[in-house]
Length: 180
Image 1 (cartoon, rainbow, N blue to C red):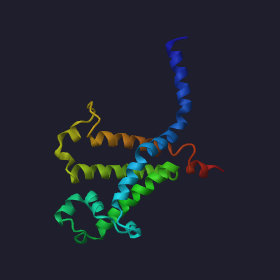
Image 2: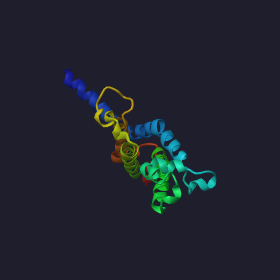
Image 3: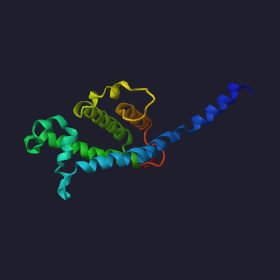
Image 4: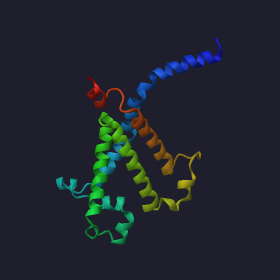
């Protein structure tokens, strides 16, 4: 047997395991990113039960850093638009990860999370001054894993792209609903 024959046999076995990729992607998302996004969302909620519709000061500062600085961190000077964006971002950080983990509307949730990560990254770079550090953008493909927003977020997006392209896979609500 030639080396290529062994390689072809191994490739066929790996191809047979490909349907497990979406399930593995959801498990990794749950293990790596679920608590991150939920913890972030909790910092945006206001006090008590009303906090679900009344975002915290920190929520506005995280999402609209320059506008908050311009108005002296007085939320009352911001409009309804700002409140709706903050609420939408907060709800997205809770609901989209949940949908991904349980595998419901997974492709749509993954696309939503990709959009969320893009907006989050742009806010970090332009709103929070990430561009002031040259290494933030210039460090792609370097040997250092720390402190580089875009390297890390590119991996997050790739994980979500697997779900957007392949769907939820096995052990998901999507798979259960698709059965006749």
